[in-house]
Length: 146
Image 1 (tube, one colour):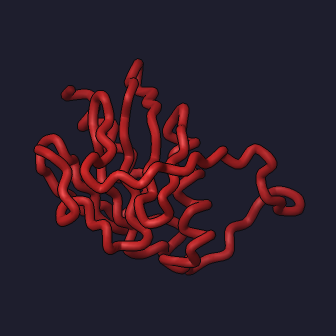
Image 2 (tube, rainbow, N blue to C red):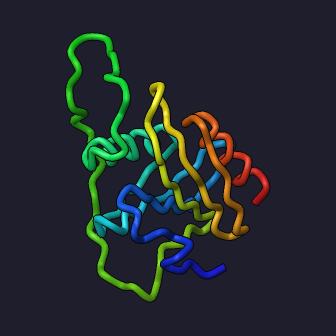
């Protein structure tokens, strides 16, 4: 399926396109594309993916987090923040991962986790998730079948 503006939800500001380029022993890597921001960032594992998405939502202030996260010691902004790469505007070609492409729309950040929808672009399958853990399991399950 070719990505279109409609199924990518370009009008949704907190929407991210996750392009998976490698998957080995349950470790995935690739890039996150923020079309609204015309930015992409690489990730090397699922932890980096989730951390980058959380930074993105915090920067947008949408969806608003319903809790203030606790941490050991004084909370500091990470010094190893991902390096964003500006995308060249090209409305004809949308990002596609070598193995899989997912469009993620987090609608709520309640109970210290995320709730939203994920679209597996290649299979045109759309699922709801009620937590970040469920999101991870959906991505991992999809990649295990490719």
